[in-house]
Amino acid sequence: MRNLHRPRRKEKPNVPAFARRRALAQWRGVDLTEQETARTDHAKSAANVLPKLLDSIGLDRKRSEAEIIKVWNHLIDPVVTAHAQPTGINKGTLFVSVDSNVWLSEIVRYRRKEILRSLQSAFDSDMIARISFRVG
Image (cartoon, rainbow, N blue to C red; front, side, top):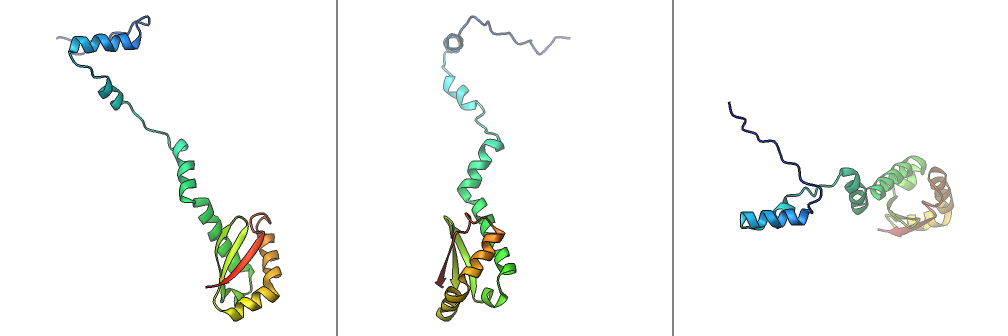
């Protein structure tokens, strides 16, 4: 029985790759260099792609905002949480939407410092340095 699989020839180390490609192109009558380079695998590992992807979609920011809302609902007085909810955080400022001007005035005058202290005790003071209340 004849062996259908020929052993691969080893490339000579002293022959440069471009000379080999040029000789093959002349022998074939066609230069396939572009097709051969297009077939090379350009896959990247998940470890290289994932951090950039997570940064681009802002997953850490969304997770911290969800955690702030959860802590807000547990630490802050339920009467206040019924009228005010955090809407976002940016550069250490927590933005809170309040449902009316009356509650905005109440919170800003009497409860702002208490709320800020409670949140800073739960998180870093760098994470929540200020609170901005808005009607909305």
